[in-house]
Length: 267
Image (cartoon, rainbow, N blue to C red; front, side, top):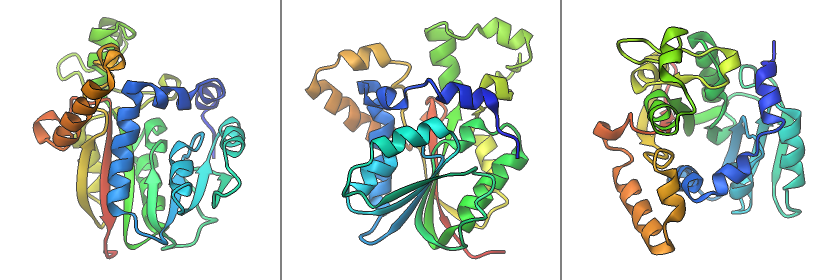
């Protein structure tokens, strides 16, 4: 199974923890944890696939849950282990989201797939990663699958901050000139999708959608303003975000989204 070297090189130097600690970055983390805590129960076993530096794994382990983590990049595993406290019941191993054959069927109550789908560029690989996540989850268990959403990224990185040259992306075939749908390759690192792409992926699986959540909403688009907010204003912004993050009319205006679904009976 070939490893994307662009991905390895990126995460060898990228500081994900710092991003999630910035005020605008905490919105995604707090939103994701809010939904995990809605479904997790005492004694549940958790699997995080593509655990990165372990931000979510550590947070859950420190709440007393048993957590197994799988991570592709060696550097991330080193940071994960360095950040592990003595009282955490957490274990991380190196592995690929496309092949979890070392894990038995129906093992986990909660499965987190919060990063791998960012870096898979065709539907076959995405369906394989989703299939593996579903396979290792117990019947009735809950899976959280995260995606990078194209329109939020285009508004933020393209039209707002200018980190993406929109005209060049269209010229190079990375954006459709009429619909502005995105097309990514491994060298682009992140696979950008829309909700209709996610709906199509999930249509083949025996699952029940519980929530589709815009996990950071406009937070990246508004990052400078959010980072300047005082505590009271930021708390009010979070209250607004939590109240609106499942609204269908705002679903595309986000940089990240989580599809939360329950494993059903196999067809």
